Amino acid sequence: MSSRPHARVRRVPPGGGMTLQRQLAFWLGTLAVFILALWLLSDILLPFVAGLAIAYLLTPLTDRIERLGVNRLVAALLIITIAVLAFVYVILLAAPILSSQLTSFFDKIPGYVAKLQALLSDPSREWVQKVLGSGFNADKSIGDLVSQGVGWLSTFLKSLWSGGRALVSLFSLVVVTPVVAFYLIYDWHNMLRTVDEAVPVRQRETVRQLAREIDAAIAGFVRGQTAVCIILGTFYAIALTISGLNFGLLIGLISGLITFIPYVGSMTGLVLAVGVAVAQFWPQWGSILVVLGIFLVGQFLEGNVLSPKLVGESVGLHPVWLIFALLAFGYLFGFVGLLVAVPMAATIGVLARFALSRYRESSFYTGTS
Image 1 (tube, rainbow, N blue to C red):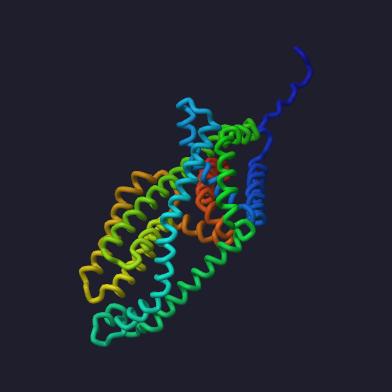
Image 2 (cartoon, rainbow, N blue to C red):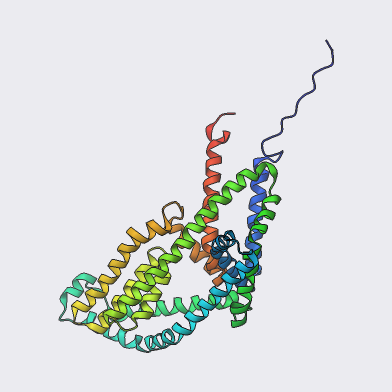
C-alpha cells in the first residue's frame, strides 16, 4: 500500500469554473453594451430594426413555403415582394382618404371643443354639475385637456423625428428596410446557428430554454396582438363609418392600431369617438349610444374572444410592465425604442423570472450550505 498522500481532487463548479457573480456580471455587461449601442446608433437603426421585425414576422411563412420544395432564396424574395406590393397598395388606397380626414379633423377640433364647452357649461343642465362636481369649470378643464393633448402629440412627433431623423426618409423605409428584411429572412437559421455555437457549452441548454421562452413570449404577443389590432381597427372603422360618425374611418383605424397599449389605447379611442359623437349628434342620444355601443362590443370581443384566442395568457407581459416599457423606450430612443420595447420587455421578463427561480434554489435563500 503506497504511503503517498492521496491527491486532492478539484471539483469544477457547474458553470465551468465561472461563479454566479461572474455570470451575472457578464450578462449585465452584455445588456449594458446593447443599451449603449442602441442609444448611440438610434439615429440610423430604424430601417434595420424595422427589417428585423418584418423578418421575424415573415420567417415562419417562408419556412412553410420552403418545406413545400421551393428554394429558400426564391421563397424569401417572393414573400418580401408580396409584402412590399401589399404595403404600397394599402398606402396608395388609404393615404388620400386618411390625409383628407386628418386635415378636416384638425380644422374642426376648435368647433368641437367649443360645442362641448357650451354643453358642459349650460346652467340648465344641473345634472352635469352634479356628476362632474360643483367646482368643475368646462372652459378651463377642456382647454387644459386639449392643450395637454396637443403638447403630448407634438412632443411624441418630435421624439419620433429626433429618434430617426438621419434615415427617416422615403428611401430608407421603402428601399433599405425590404432589403434588410430579405437578407435576414434568407439567413435567419444560419444566424441562429452561429449565435447558438457561440454560447458556452455548459450553459447552452439553459440559454436555449430561455431563448425558447423569450421567442414564445415575443411571438405570442407581437403576432397575436398584430392580428387583434388589424381586426379591431377594421371593425371600428367600418362600424363607425356606418353609424354616420364624422371621421369614423380615421378614428376607427387609430383606435384599432393603438389597441396594443393595454387600456390606454382602448380608452383613448373611446373618449375620442364619444367626444366627436356628442359634438356632432347632440341632443340625439340614440346616435351617441350607438357609438358607445360599438366600442363596448369591440372591448367585449377583444377581452373574451380575440385576445384569449390569438394572444393567449402564456405571454407573461403584465399590462403595467408593458406600458412602462413602451413609454420608457419611446422616450429614450424615439420610434426605434417603440419597435424594440415589446421584445425587450418580454426578454427582461423571462430573464427576471429565471433569475428569481435560481435565487430561490440558492443556498443564500434556503439557508443551507
